[in-house]
Length: 623
Image 1 (cartoon, rainbow, N blue to C red):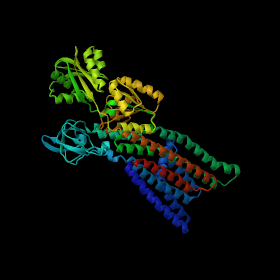
Image 2: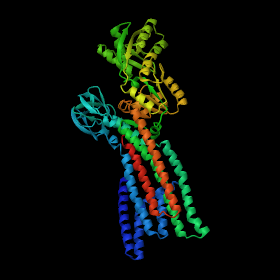
Image 3: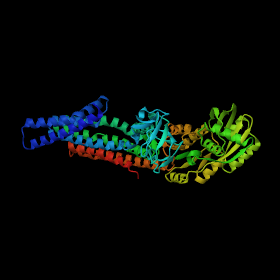
Image 4: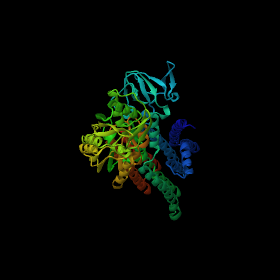
């Protein structure tokens, strides 16, 4: 039976069982025939217990004792000892509570439905000059699509014609629409503004940003956090012990003290139902799912409850500089050419055309502004943490930092002095050269993110003991950033492997450390960190793959926001555990003294489950 059909059938049988129970009670009160009354109660219990017993026995086959199994034992036991009304009422209350519980759980799990159903079903595809509606799953990379004003963007694309403001809030949480024109990337799930756009599809649907986000959210919701695993382990040991105690209560007093069997069997059934750890087991996952959902709705993708839980009270934060604490939009402020000004710029442009590095983009923009484009590079190769090499018109060229050129033995004392002057002015020096000599040096400067200082101050106020910066940039530029942002410790001129080494050393002193990077150059360190946060930039592939947490909008203020969600989530988890245990203790005491009835036990257990679910849903409130 399909899940949707089963749910409808289950609801229908609950309604029928409720009608039969009420009819049987009424018939009993007017002193109807005994056999007819019992037949009605039997029909009510059998109808209402059908799916409960099936799920309980299915769990038992896996050696798992869940609430369905315990209620089945309680209802059947009560019926056998002649407590027909109790049996029917227990089943009815349990089914009603289950319906409410399912509704509550669905509210949490569907909190990101708007995120997961962002892509439209069809796209307007340009085929031989005509617009044809095609299902998004049938559109391939390279095809041209037409996006009308007000439409959702169906696939990750690059604008080829038109200008519009695009609302990216479903993906990034960014409220202000972003201007998009020729050459800009647009993402599936975003909403087009007033302008019409033509765009080339970059990825098919299965590899689009929204599809990958959906996969990440679903995996995150399925992955258990540490607190959830601890509760599950407790329940596996606790439930069999409770069943054993119930059996002793049912058997020992009648056998040893010659007390009445029905009364002590009844008491054992009450203890059995009250002791079920359902509320305790469900208290953690529903709260974690709510936290993950709230994060996703605000443009923060977290790959599992463990990572959100780990953001509760981090001891230290490690930040990359370029693209993380700075805007990642550097500009060339100085250009010193030693051999052919225009030619050097054209070579630099050709090499950087094949690179995605932040500094490379600045060099390209500068070369374009000087009209120096035109050459093409080939056989390009990135040298991790140092630079780039490629062939231009059959000759090999290099572009990168001082250590790269020192290793190639093409440094010049005069050039180094010029580079040092640039670095003394807190700029990054980038060398350009061939196999024989240095041709030019670029001075490049980036701007700090406006919110960086406030974010670091807020993280310290929330209990972070250490803020550290790791960067491949020169000592002077790094020092200026650390001084302005009041960063506790700074390590500069690092290779990617150096960042990992420093990260490992820091984690020895501060085990709960968070690494924050731009998701491109910092991928190795982000992957190695216990918790890695990537500046996602609208869902870049490296950010989604390498980090545990991706900020879909490059906004540092989301980091304290995640910490607040984590702290709120952990506080509610603790509340739920206290509520679940307290109710158990109170009603077990009542049951032991004979003051609790079976229907009260069901209300106490399932009612507590619903209470902790609704308490967990409070995380969804963005406060």
